[in-house]
Each structure stands twice: as structure tokens, then as C-alpha cells.
Amino acid sequence: MHPSQVLFQDQQQPVLLPVCDHYAGSEKLMHKSISLQNDLGPVFDITFDCEDGAAAGNEAAHARLVAALIASEQNQFQRIGVRVHDVDSPYFEQDIALIAPIAADKLAYLVLPKVSDAGQVRQAIDSINQHFASYRSEPVPVHVLIETHDALAQAHQIAALSQVACLSFGIMDFVSAHYGAIPSTAMRSPGQFTHPLVMRAKLEIAAACHRFGKVASHNVTTEIKDTAIVAGDATRAIMECGYTRMWSIHPDQIKPIIKALTPRSAEINEAISILSAAQQKEWGPIQFNGRLHDRASYRYYWTLLKRAQQSQIALPEQGHALI
Image (tube, rainbow, N blue to C red; front, side, top):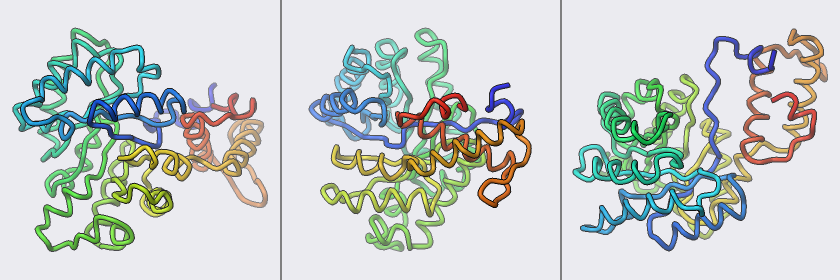
């Protein structure tokens, strides 16, 4: 049996996505992000933005542009998604109606912003599926932005929806929704990792994702040029809050995020050693460097190897055989 079958059996295997989600709104930035992805490989996703990227009155033309770029030969890795307008906007249906016929088979995911509850997400998914049914055999993965009080209150119900693959924290809208009760300093570091209400939101979203095997995606870092702050935010996001993915809003942020959220070589080597020893014992308990390991820790190390593979890290042959 394959290690994944032994280790997970009837349990749901977690969704795995590239660790960086890079947002691009204008035509110039969309072309630039595709070029960078083609240079680096599919180590980060790109999200084209119809919500904030389209100028007023230009929503339809922008959606068509987004669809054409996704459908083009430039999209080598098919790791480009789209943030559409919010469900209550008159442009939500227009976005998906224009994108589906052109880009359905190469679209990586759709992002739903400003949702209010799980029922609204279900309605949006139903509409998405109706538009895409004629153009795509598999359902479109849906990513959901949690940026309102009501959405946070139903984070677990939203994460439980089968077509939802990822929850992202929209920190600026969330802080703004408190009308001054949370200071603006909580939108950036270090305040975003110390303010109780913001940390509560981050942890609740992460807990909901991990409960249902979905990906928790951390909010933006507004410091564009200081890559040390970006790297620090990404490191704290995974180490303190359990996020395995993070937004990028500038090309200079992509590499620091990838480096911070990708498993280190020492972790990878340890995982291979432990899993190899466990496989020799037919996945029974083992001692390794004086510590007990069983299937609970094997699942952790196996997922770590899968995350490394997702990040295009060159694994030794022994590592590939395990995953």
C-alpha cells in the first residue's frame, strides 16, 4: 500500500497549495507576474483581481482580459486564479459568466471576497457550478476571504464546504469593521501579532482550516520594500498561527514568503529518515534518536514532504519513493 493509504486510511488528506498567493490587478502587473511565475516555476500562485483591479465602468472588459490571459499559452502551469466581485455586487455573476467560457479548463481557483456566512458561500458555489458546468468536468476550487464579523463567526461552517479549498484573512477590512476600536497599528507588525481581537481572528480561521483539511492563507504585509518585515511576518504566520500560505502584493515579497513557508532541508532530511525507518517496520511505532514515533507523527512528516514537493524542492530518490 502507498504510504498515504496507510497513514490516512479513512481520514481526509489535507489540501496542499503553493505557499505564496500573489495578487495582480492591472494588465501590466498581470503580465509581469506571469513572466515571473514562468521563470521561477509553479512555486507561487497568481490571483488576478477583478474586485479591486477593474476601473469603474470597465468591469466587463477587465474580466475578459483576465480570462484571455488565463486561457493563453503564457499560463504554462495553470496556477492562476481570480478574485471576483463580492456576491452582492451586480458584477459577481458577470465576472463568472465572462470567465467560464474562455478560461474554465485552465483556471486554478476563484476567490470570494466579503462573504457574510456559509449560506451565501453555498449560493455562490451553486452559481459558479452552473456557469462552469458546460466548460469544465471538475468543480472549480473556491477560496474564501474572511474579513467580516459574520464570516469569522461561521469560519468552521465555511471551511466544511467540500468545494472550499482555502480561507484567507482580510485583515484591513476586518480591522476597519471595528470602527476605531482596534487601532490601525494592528493592521501591520508587530501589532497584528499582539492585538487580542486580531489574533483571535487569525487563530479561529487557522483552526477552522485545519479541522477540515483546508489551507489557511495569511493576510498581506503592507510593507512593500522591506523584505525582512515580509519574511518576519511569514515566519510568525506559520510558527505562531499555523498558516501555510500567505498573500503577496508586490513581486519583491514573493521570494521571502516562499523561503519562510517552505520546509527547511534539515526538516526534510529528518522526515525522510523517520518515514524510511517507519516503512521498514510496516508503519508500526519506532524509536528515532531516542524519541518515540508512530502514525500520528508519520502523518506530520509525510505532509511535510508533500509540502516540500509542492514547493518544487528537489527531493532525493528516497524521498520521492515515500510520497
